[in-house]
Length: 284
Ligand code: GUN
Image 1 (tube, rainbow, N blue to C red):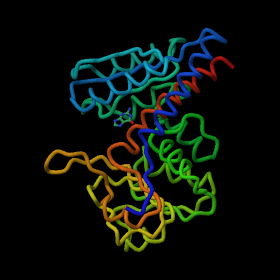
Image 2: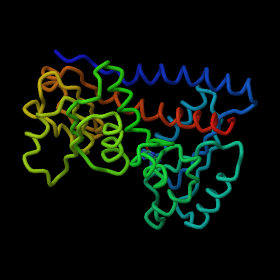
Image 3: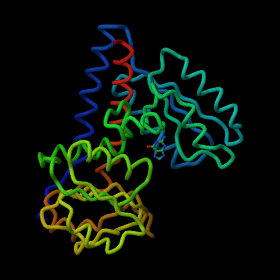
Image 4: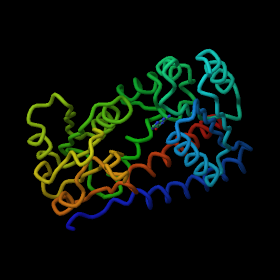
């Protein structure tokens, strides 16, 4: 393997240790313990695992967790009432509404009901708009984690040709904006892009969030590129697998992130960071 590994798990551990220290210092200085409200509606098993992992990480970092598990039959107005309560609760600095929500609930209405000042996921249009304008407050966790992973390589972002594959509101679009803010030249590719392999081959930074197992093959990668794989797909055997065909691409790339152990742990670490930063803002 020629590429060096971007170890998201190790990087996330470093972030979490720093946040544990910062939370303890904040509590000592101002009596404020960072607090995250987690709201999970229904019984999707994967969502239960994700929320449990986030809660465990919070507790290890000294973040107070306010856990709300609601039945699948919860109405939109009941959920809105809970969010309103958490918006007004001074012990809470971040609110996480786990997605997907049951079909009878409009996710857009719910995400817009979360106070932009407690939007630890960075999904509120206010925070998205702040990012567009170049002055972000809360940044979405996954793209924020991807930026930290690129920075960890020591490869400067400024002036680089960056290609983002995928244009979702929670990864592709905000990631492209974060790269632009750091003076990369950014292209966003999607299902209608013509000759996508040729565009990818130009990338010095190739960031893949398209949700298709092993979509990026070695012929799509420029030699020495930094390749970050945001994909979490399941193989027919039930194994977790990224959007990048890891083995052949790693013989060509300069840096590559694995799945699992890449972006996933960093997403959780960034949720904690957003919560601690929010608590610090309330302390002034
Ligand atoms: N569901 C899958 N990923 C996420 C995430 O990052 N945040 C929330 N709230 N829900 C999710």
